[in-house]
Image 1: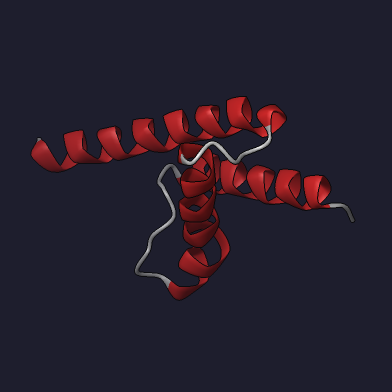
Image 2: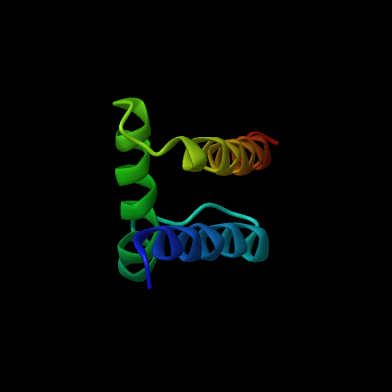
Length: 80
């Protein structure tokens, strides 16, 4: 499996997790942190330093939009 295939597989896992659970992965859950949070954190750093492959940037930005939407939805629920 190539690095691109591994990256795309993890990307898809994160998207499925968020859509299935209607929330972002928890940094307090060891499994979720190990599988998803660390991957998100690492790729956010790579993108912000300009080292991410151009074909991944747009996909990752869409994923960040999804995580932002989920966290905004959760804060609205806790406010109300």
